[in-house]
Image (cartoon, rainbow, N blue to C red; front, top):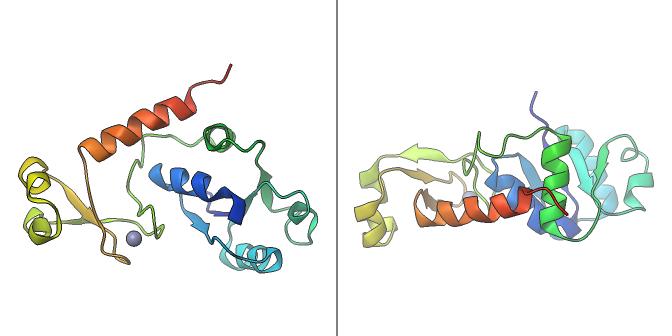
Length: 156
Ligand SMILES: [Zn+2]
């Protein structure tokens, strides 16, 4: 079964990039350690953390992946390698802000909600069921794919 994650408050950028890959990652910019550990247990999520104190807490010691270093590219590579995540399998299927799975919508439904040059040039649109943000392919996606390639390149 797919591993679901919850990232500690220091790992916002990592959480966002894991969402780009379609991983299920909860993230709260301010959450207490105790609350985080409890939420992880309650929702069956593995804690991603850089916090050496947090990992010693009861409930966290057996339920975390410790991320090394402060560079999000490096962090992303560690998680992708350790969990065998396929970077392209579910690329941009999840809202980067809400973590919700995107839903496909008819092109016509996007008409008044995206810039007209986007509407003219894009074919597929998806929407976040929580924040209603519209996602499409194209430049946005290419830029991210390139950035991702950089991130996942084996380090020196
Ligand atoms: Zn959203």
